[in-house]
Image (tube, rainbow, N blue to C red; front, side, top):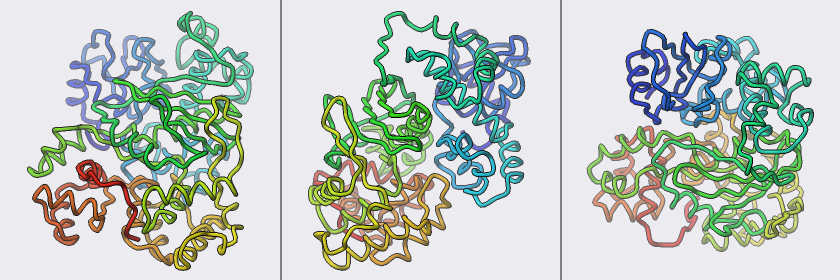
Length: 492
């Protein structure tokens, strides 16, 4: 599985003939005789190889005149791992498109965020994905429309607006073209027993197996900030700050998917909310590639074999995570949660939770920039770190969003007072999403490494971990899982 895999015809044909779900999202199969495109694992009888063509995106299939298969629903397959494991222009653009930037700001806005001209962005996306930013955004709108048609009782006019279409006619034409069904026919196909609660959407978030939910949900529950996050009845719940309003997400691990329940103040935020939940849980990862690389180390292999499919718990808000990383420096998890909860109560935006338990959005950098440093119950040096960080985030001189250049963001973080390599790599791993971020000075990592017979000093451990690249952030999850000590954020 690698960049440009749709060009390797022999491997693609074998994946389709074996119905290999590991390749879902990596490429799409378009059938010349039926003019239908599918995911590799489609349950129907595979077409003859001479009738198959392969495309890197659903948008490229749609651009070529193919419609989505009604059996395998390729628009609902996991996203390509490429976009969350790379930091080049195309990957950053895809993360921004998933976050709804083209719909809100157009192609010029997308290009401005990336620091390139619209023509440069268009050319690179076409070269790698077979579709430009408008076509990619259109494919996402079609998927959003399908979700709203099938999971709500909203009138079609409201769905068209919420999905980002400029008119009812465009909405109807796009749905017919992509799915070969009218919006009304799509709604008629849904299960009659579907419960459609007003304001709440229930959907399934797919992933590539295996997925080990223990560290993923365990870490989120252990570090949950009261009022913003909670663990209740087997679900992780949290508030979301979104472009058009706010939301509440409830995420429950299931054997073959993550059950997601979203309550949104504005339905236009649906694709962004889904994208951020997927990113939080690292659902587009390729565990086969990750675990295969880590197994090459004979001392790490037993950990991988014992509980394969560990993911890196990430974040729904990069600025929020950076602030919380500073609050957690040199204190226990419980103390970090207490510091964060005080800020939430004093400066967070109140929200209404119909189920009770969640009360606020985490404060924005702009709100935190107005906090009196003397009111912070932390050492003076950490107060300086906190105020400098939120000031840079608030004035835009520090960008940690999905469009960030990882190297540039690391350098800017490292230049801040109180930011050492440990804090920078934690932010790189959890907020920026760098799959190769590593923490050789972390006490828990060093302790676990020594117990396994791995080198215990940071320099020696870093040298040994070179063989784990580019998946060292996942190795961190396996090593942390062996540590029975409570989570502490000690180094800076």
